[in-house]
Length: 141
Image (cartoon, rainbow, N blue to C red; front, side):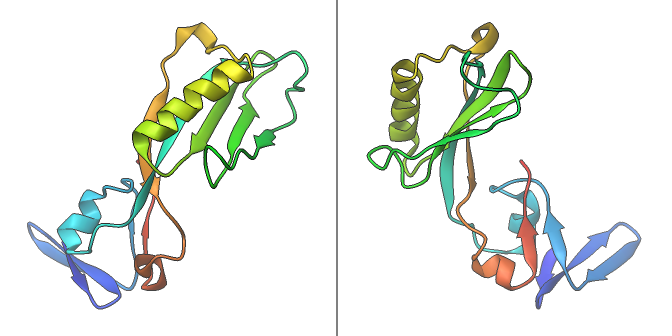
């Protein structure tokens, strides 16, 4: 695969495909993007864990906390059921984000559900990237 103007060109064994738009649904570190010769995109760390839902949190209500000392973004708690939900945060630096997440868990007295470990990954930093303006989209992961 290689870039062709705003779209892409894919060569397979017996055919060549041309497209006006190419969607790489393989995440921020996209193999599709690399194969196309697109430059790497800026990423930010995301940390998330499944936690027991606090008694004062209705299962039909998402909570958001703004903690500017931890992140320029926010923490979220999205209920998955009456018993548990996904708690997460997007930060600026991986190790700092993990530390802030652990401190937030303790401060809010939230417990991981079934002892599940947290998930950490990098995600694309923003929708206003050059790749998106050029009708390229990288998602998933």
